[in-house]
Length: 105
Ligand SMILES: [Zn+2]
Image 1 (cartoon, rainbow, N blue to C red):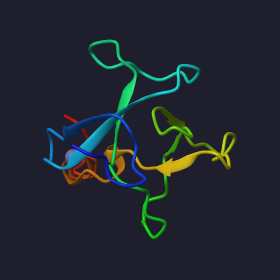
Image 2 (image 1 turned 180 degrees about the horizontal axis):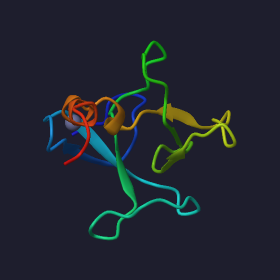
Image 3 (image 1 turned 60 degrees about the horizontal axis):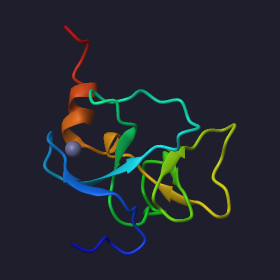
Image 4 (image 1 turned 135 degrees about the vertical axis):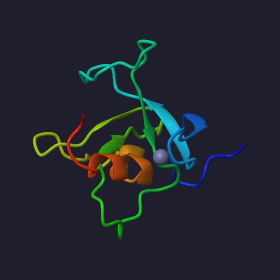
């Protein structure tokens, strides 16, 4: 049970939609985000260090200790002491398929 080098520190889980490994990382308390059904503010990140060659841009910034994260936005870009990370929502094949599958019914 060791985290991948450079990856986020959090709760190792498996995506219920596609079965890929994910890491649940708390979102910085200063960032307004939707809470999950249990009132927690955690989001699934892809484990391991962010791949600079990724076709999908990084979505989140991990804190220096990699124990919490926040969304990266144009108004709030990555800081030198932070680490880029990508939410699993952006790459989950099950979710992306659903998202492009047409209008919700
Ligand atoms: Zn998935």
